[in-house]
Amino acid sequence: MERLSFFDLPGLRTGHAQNAEAGTGCTVVICEEGAVAGVDVRGGAPGTRETDLLDPGNMVERIHAVVLAGGSAFGLDAASGVMEVLEERGIGFDIGMTKVPIVCSAVLFDLLCGDWKVRPDRAMGRAAAENAFDPAFTPLRGSVGAGTGALMGKFHGLDRAMRGGLGAFAYRTGPLVVGALVAVNCLGDVMEPGTGDILAGAWDRKERRFLGTEDAVMNAYQEKKNVFAGNTTLGVVATNARLTKAQAKKLASMAHDGFARSMRPAHTMVDGDTIFALSVGDLEAEMNTLGALAARATEEAVADAVRSAVGGYGFPSVADIKI
Image (cartoon, rainbow, N blue to C red; front, side):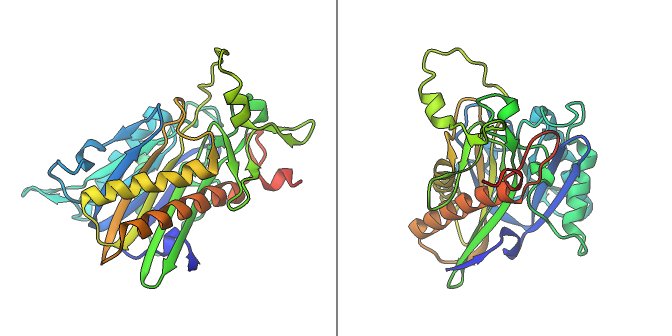
């Protein structure tokens, strides 16, 4: 298999906008021609917009953008700016007098990083969409877009947390391409693909060692600990295979295996872990193959997110703690 980036997938445009000083941002994935889409929400504390219409029983068949944003529930406002840009460009569901862009969104909690009073809003969403259409714009990874204020490893306290980030990865096998874009902001630790060793997470700065979140969570069965420290990992998986809405939903579900492999624990009650799946092609492909590739690409994108991040706001990155 050939290793690619999510940004290599045809039919998609990706744009970021962020306030680096305040520590928040958003990322938009635009499908100008529309994409068959599905979603699977596994975390216990999600913040989403327009996910009900992705149910296979509902009318709308295609969406035009997915927005991943910081800012907790406040960040859902960024999708309105994306809608403005798409409507101005004549992109959306035709209702006669105008076209209504179908824009789905999910948010992560990054209010503990930087200035909590600044959140992704309509203007930031608009800027991200305009960047996506700008031929001079190159989407980056790491501490950008929805990954700007992302943190991880917060179960042991913020003084042990590390920077999360935004990661991108894709596989090509023959003509089939499956990719993942992930904003990592998890309660737990991130594991190294292939080895299961901790790559990043709860880090004891004095003793220079990982504390291990999963074991701590399993041993805290009687502890009434407030772990609402701001979490949620968000993802978009996309493929050039032709899918129905039901198949897209299943692909999003299968991609969550990548979260389970790469973050421990994943899908907690204080994470809003959500994955969208997009079909932007017409290739015939077997669902088990698609699911396996999506899970692996998601796992690699999680690792790419934390490897690409840079330290800031008092939180170290993977590069800062090389051991």
